[in-house]
Amino acid sequence: MTTPKRDYYEVIGVAKTAAPEEIKKAFRKEAFKYHPDRNPDDHEAELKFKEVTEAYDVLSDPERRKVYDQFGHAGLEGQGFRGGGEDIFEQFQDLFADFFGAGFGGGGGRGGGRGGGRGQPRVQAGRDLRTGVRLSLRDAVYGSKRDVSVVFPSTCAGCSGSGSAKGSAPVQCRQCSGRGQVTQGTMGFMIAMPCPQCGGAGKVIAKPCGDCGGRGEVRSEKKVKVSIPAGIDHGQAIRVQGQGEPGPNGGPPGNLLVVVEVEGDSKFQREGHDLIAEVPVPFHTAALGGGVQLANLDGAPVGVEIPPGTQPGTAFTLQGLGVPYVDGSGRGNLIAVARVEVPRKMSAKARKALEEFARALNGSDA
Image 1 (tube, rainbow, N blue to C red):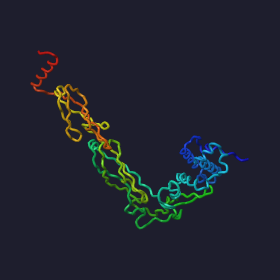
Image 2 (cartoon, helix red, strand yellow):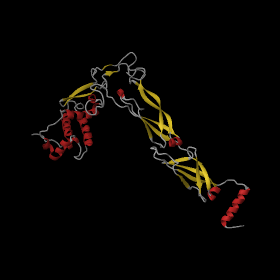
Image 3 (cartoon, rainbow, N blue to C red):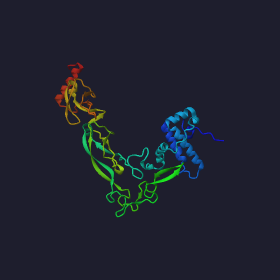
Image 4 (cartoon, rainbow, N blue to C red):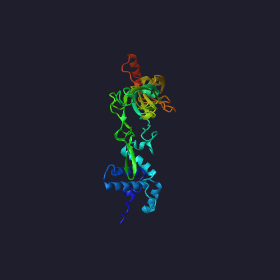
């Protein structure tokens, strides 16, 4: 008696409403658990692996999944399992790469990256680097240029990048005979994977370089000139193209991310694109009105008109004198907050005049 097939969704371990990425993730988990290379001589695990693979073969194909959802296993009769075909093998290359390393299959098939046939290293873009720069509020608001230090990997001068000590050279890997790959048979087809001994290079370092420990690279430092755009704020980053790590095997370099840290200022406070500062207002000017001057963040004098009866803490908005927008579309405002200054000492004449002023306010002539 033939054992009825289990529901494919049950086999994978997902709901019928599962998205393709959810199905793929669940399949990876189950396939990894039951893969024959992890369960040698385990017939039950091999059957489970075939069942999981067959289920994924159907559920990963939108058309076949639609048929299966409508008619079940009966709707797929006569179509067979495509496990030995080229299409499903290419699908599995991405999945087996997770098990055996990113170099699975020598870069052929989907997701193999640029370059490289069998045994050839993949050409990849270099990684981005990250560093920081500390700015005064003035430099952040008006922009500047800075040299920043960047630590990055460079070719070891002691071995010219080979990783081998002077006078020696990498030797052919015995396990893969220099091919960079080993193959294993499973489910009726051969799976190629990076050689675990040489990592897919086809060669191994017999005598490592003393300067780099066989890595072929050392950490170096360089100075990179960075243009700080006017208006940049604390925590924002500047991307400098092509100043990251060099790309492996001749690939393009990555980028440099420069994260900005803005120092506080003793006189000005930034709120978005506005600058806020106190403006000293003499007592008599606050009472009678008049004009005072404030030095802006760049040192330029700014006139502030004080109306009679100005109270302490009154804010005056000066349009367009604040922080520029990074995209150049405008700038914020300068907000001057009145700090009324009461004299601590005064002459006898000034005191007498103030007393007369107080009596006049009170309506008394005495």
